[in-house]
Image 1 (cartoon, rainbow, N blue to C red):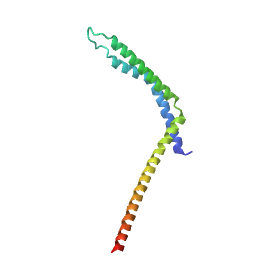
Image 2 (spheres, rainbow, N blue to C red):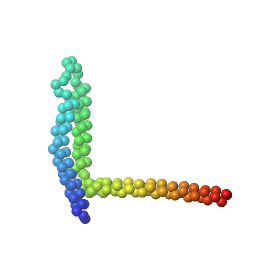
Image 3 (cartoon, rainbow, N blue to C red):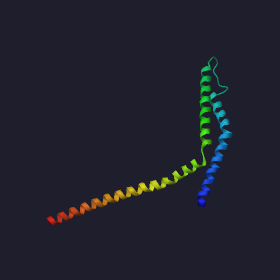
Image 4 (tube, rainbow, N blue to C red):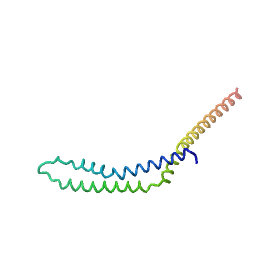
Length: 130
């Protein structure tokens, strides 16, 4: 195992730890801030009913909480092997792009050679006629 692989693995572990730290410490305050913005405290119209808005806000809050809990659970279930597999897949992308490029280049060269051979055969045929 090379030094580059060890460094990459270390960085993945550091990013995972930092990510878990931020989710654990800042998910609640960020959610509360967003909910505070959606409720728009202090701006109301006299005589207007807020029951429907409160129900919608409660439903939205529950949905946001559920989604945040789901994302947090998925993030916490992410293992180092999953991260390493993802890195391995990303490392194969340049190889795949190179393979497609090489294949395209070969096809174009074959097409050009084929057309050049046809042209030469046509010229040869015409020279026999003369």
